[in-house]
Image (tube, rainbow over all chains, first blue to last red; front, top):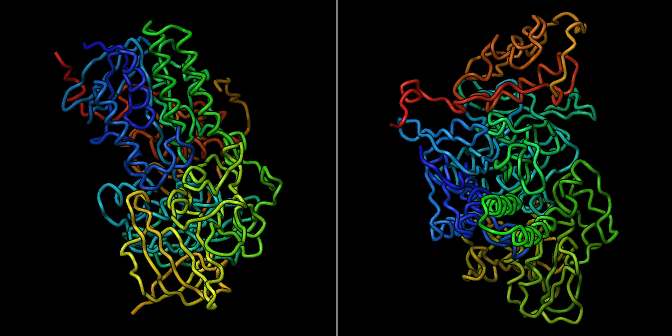
Length: 527
Length: 106
């Protein structure tokens, strides 16, 4: 039996973060992961993260994964892959299946960072090949470069459903609809908007009636449901699809903790069966900690901070650092975590209907019901202003903890005020030099550079563009509205791709000037 | 949780439903109707259901269906799913072949 000071189960964002903190203090750390690659879900995340600098904001998920792995490696953390932990006991003995053998390890402390698994909903046909989880779709696209299907219906409008829908579009698939049983879009409005402006329709208060097909999916029927989730007759809609993707929530994979005798609770707010933990993740069994989604479904950014907390706690538990040092570090992590847990989508606001922003502005109801801000709603938000010449138009309309835009502008044009969740606004006296850094830095792809009147009856709109093949200067096509409908003719003026934009290309299109505030996406004319 | 179940509660007769033939536990091929019937046969805890029907004892070890089974049993008993104690977790957490499980490092 091998002995380690810390045994960590799960090499995802929280497990690796815990390993790094513990190894920094000098502890001997091993991390087991059942997968062939480390990083958990991070390597499937090709979008830029939200938050502030401390939360790795505007860095793409897989990059964060690479950084964590490098750091862990440099600190001498042992990461053992294809290693399935099959047993955990209260005396911190860990049984691991590696190859064709069971190995026994003993940890002075154990951190469980096993994450979560996807929920499923049932309907006739749900076991047909072609009905898949959103996680599977991401694995196929982003790890293996395979399209999960050609025509796809997404069930679930939370952030996972929205982000994966956008990635499906990027992979060249057609997303025929995003369907959700709830009456409002569950994820960030900016994620919904970037999918909506590509022309994907949202069906809220709808669910799947049945999936059709004999030995694989050939179609799907959805229907509307009432407030009590009962189907409304006569509202059926049929779509020809070959794939139905489910993004209907996650459940913590907490079985190891239960096996070890940790006190558990069924907490719907945390996503199901979770260990009862203190604010730093310590369970009822002394020396066993839980970090990340396993102790409550949140996101990778908070999972990383929870991992760091557990790492520092085990260092103090084993006497590597004093209580004072631990408390000083925990205080910083608590502050970071607290700032992520602010805003409309904070865990404390889950399920609440929020009607006004912190600034007292009415929320866009169209955004919640259809996935995009209506033309008559957009003007009331502070980031949407008008002036002569090129200037930023920030279509950020919900209080979420994110602020890379304010650091992006070299002229300090943009501010989110004192609070990370406030809506960004453009400072009146600041000068815009049309550099595009704000457009590329916005993780929600919600910033546009607009010149409303070029003097010849046209306007230019610069938008973030993350699709291939890239349009070329001079290409003709259409300006699409926020809803994704063709509203005007458009010509590509330029496509800028520089390293600082980190793969977000800036496409500038010329449109008739009356569409300066309406056209928000470009679609090339089919030849 | 862990409250003693009142076995004298009347949950009524088993009433067939149109989707009773829908598969819930894919690994062990157990339908919604079989799970509902099991409740009426007196299997009121998830552990009992598991032993009676083998739900969640296949390849995925309940990763997909345990939440679904819990929901069906809770609805049949007229309680909230959170009130039902989940089935026991024990090693091996993932399916392991006996020849591997029995082969311990020296």
